[in-house]
Length: 287
Ligand SMILES: Nc1ncnc2c1ncn2[C@@H]1O[C@H](COP(=O)(O)OP(=O)(O)OP(=O)(O)O)[C@@H](O)[C@H]1O
Image (cartoon, rainbow, N blue to C red):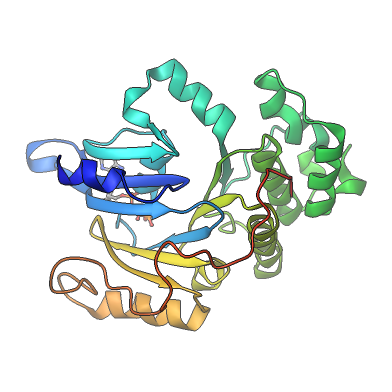
């Protein structure tokens, strides 16, 4: 059994990336965007992915979400190895099991808030049942805006619509790519609280790429990438500690915070990496 296969047989996770290598280009233009990353995103956890520009955060997210393929290694959603799926099945998996929140909101301008929220489910041929829809709408605080168009909403409200849309189809995991990048700090805070609350109350899994230590502090755990490698992780983060860690990477040369054996150092939490930080409500209730 290879090392990769051994790692695949350990604790279940919502998303798992094992020995992930992603190489763009060839020869002189080759870039090793991911250089052997192994990380689990456990069910019911809100994880932030941080690291300097170019460290591989977006590449990791895109490969874990089936938007891009790895050069070697494996990306799994639950038990499903994404590399085993053809394009059609990958599209269905993304549609049915993954929610996305983007920096630019990506709402359809001609549709109302309600229609935007239910669009992915409608495209999948499902209906969001009324009770679930109501719970989501109340969780994101948009009841009085349901018949408005995105252009009639503030940026924070638009992003809350995007969060509602991401969770409406009851996905296994929501990937959020810089979800507060276009928001002022107050609106950003609201969106982050919403994500955190949804994870805690519903047991859903969120993976968020961010540059912002304040945003990362809303997560249960922060993982740090540098030069395409996982170099550190921090549970129960605070903005100050995340900022300190980022500064340390910036001033460090070469391998940054990597430990002597090349593995990331988890120096901050006595709990195991697989320990659940919050009480969960399993069973797929909506936010
Ligand atoms: N399609 C591509 N073709 C070639 N190189 C790429 C491509 N996408 C990313 N890269 C390179 O891979 C490396 C990692 O990029 P990635 O976008 O994953 O980093 P990041 O940490 O998300 O950066 P940022 O914080 O600036 O968004 C970078 O050196 C980048 O230039």
